[in-house]
Amino acid sequence: MTDVTNTESTNRISRTDIENKLRSIQELIQGRLKDEKQTLVGAAVGAGFIAVLVAYFAGRRRGRKKSAFVEIRRG
Image (cartoon, helix red, strand yellow):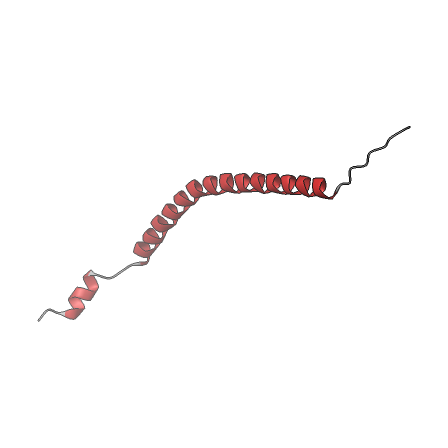
């Protein structure tokens, strides 16, 4: 059988190993976040513009439906 204590001492995880791994994960996430942020901002602006257009045309249609047409005749 192999000696367990010898294997544990060579495969020990140090604090610097954990810090390096977490730092690499953080850099990966931040890189992806920058790319996705630009896409999300563009999508939000587009969705807002479409919402404004829909509200404008819905209000315009409703205004036409409810407005009365009055004809004045002189005579």
